[in-house]
Length: 324
Image (cartoon, rainbow, N blue to C red; front, side, top):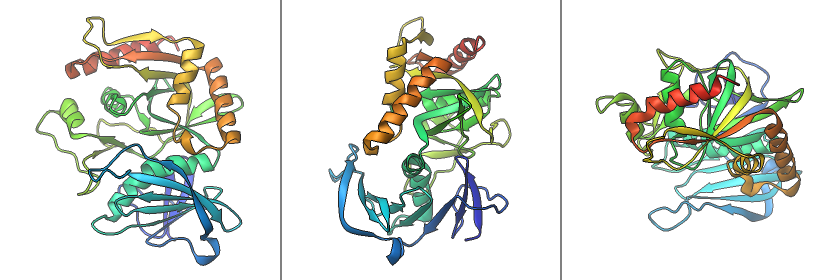
């Protein structure tokens, strides 16, 4: 256990290097990652597991992409995440330990992609951290996040904002915590995940970015290098933009104010993995979102269907943020 990282504000140690991450100086670990093995006998789930969630994403075989189970994990409740392609993860009750196994043709790079996405979203929730399925960037010294349905353009917009000099704070998973009544966005790690078509919109057809692995279509835009800034420390959250459907209207891209009720419901709808929260944690999360509505602005962002207007979309976002 001598590979140290800082992930989503958590000091993490791993038994082997994690592809795509840059090691940091050794520190007292809050999270231990064990790759290539399941939990030891003393911490293994015993008794029957309870199916908590089945993915609505179906593979070519018609089977769900993954399933999440609960079970007794040593002296507490543990989570078991089973991917149909052969990757498996186990999380302890407190979100302080995680194990992962996989089978060929999967590689460690594939497992890392799962870990840094859906698995970490679930792990943060076990640690009591509310997370949003969103991307976040720095505008004027504050955090601004983009939330919306899959494929809405959150990561592409974050990358375009980075090209304009706005540091990216987090992509895909945005943890939000409170300090003295002020909500803060916690940084993730210096990378944005982009589909090849998004890379073409940003760079042109000639540019190629490395894929997460040979088995994944998405590519990696490494931050903190050249003109792609990354923010490695927390920032107060000022505004959430909720992506609406792309429009051909001449007024698009445009920003619209949202009512308190609509804004609250939008935040709840974009919370990460609420499907596995128990009643107490769900209530706590709802209360946090209610407090957020008193301290931040929530606005609907309507992009134009023409990808060539991405820069105009960024200008609209910047203009909307000037009064924050």
